Image (cartoon, rainbow, N blue to C red; front, side, top):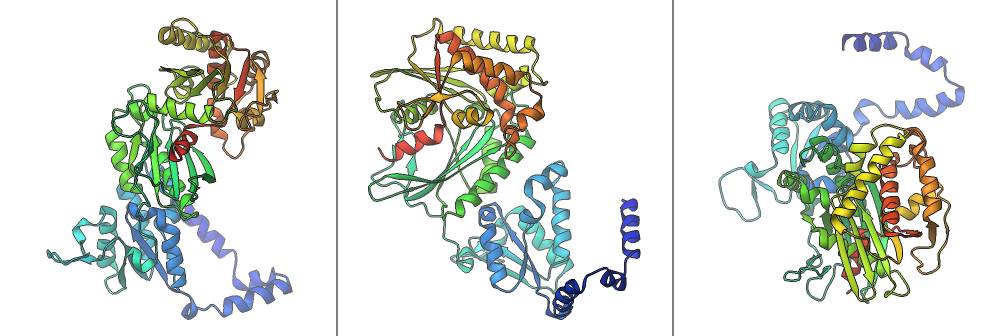
Length: 496
């Protein structure tokens, strides 16, 4: 804008070097002046623009380190512009995004292009070369811009061997659901499991990362966990279609999780999806885009497999695995109710999700009592339609980070001694009373409970109401909040 340029001119005109130096203390002058004087234009380092396709996004730290060690100052477009901000602020207009990249390139001294193989510029079949026409579209645009505008400046090509990045070769092939077993929870192919691996779980609200290691005795050590709120289900339920802004947030979160895993030396990553992705009419578009940006394949679990994995995680953490347990796993697009009565397990999947309830009932804060009552009636109707009569329940466990959530938000919890992973419990009466207080809070008050990840609280009221209504329907008086989730069930399959 012209007004912005005028502001810049006024600011520059109002300050000269003499005025600036006179404003400093003597100690400041002594520290700054020699440093700047010794860093004249002829002694400054060259800047290099780092160009790569989606496969190399997870290696951006390696690429920048490679440039710095080579004596250059790196400019990486994704790190500088931020993929999510650049995309959304430009309304996903690729031309505008590329213009930002070109602006950065004009300030750089060299262009470095990274790929898995060196380029071939002729139609030949030389072993180990890759036809330049097969390079990603964005990379080709950057090369074309460079050759057009800076033809006399260096253009260099590098591979992962040059940079020193470990090649992506999984230590073993592993899967969640073995072929030919409809209700098995999954296992590792063959006798080996990956020694160092990661799991990324794409839910309707959050993207969860778990980084693990297995030792010689096949014991699993969890090295790191991370959760990012993305609200993939935003605007989904009207026509079961994933919206582009929500997908863009999810891509950014997965890239972030890849980088996080890479800091632990992990390149072997399993990515799994659940209910919203099961229902998505544009799933193919989503999977192709996420593969292009991250080089990861997505495995979408069935409702049965998801329920079995969550149930496995919970049951395995109790001292007496034959206890009567009712496990509730409320996701963004569906809710699983699993009854364990000794040797028998019964599964129910309800078309009832936190994201769906948010769109229908929690679009204003505090939550009006009338909307709360409508939400309860809606949940109760789905319970009766899908289950019929209530089933006698034992201990009820509510999964998915609920232990941390209830501790953080101040629910009046008591000690519970039947499971080291589940140290707390709460009566239905106390839960109901505290949940009523939360419905009277405005959104800012709810967000204040989790300042590091405030949007996680967007599902709090809907989640509370699901749990309260199911407990009342089943006649349960004691609730066990659980941090167990899908990824914990996946880990247990690795050691069976």
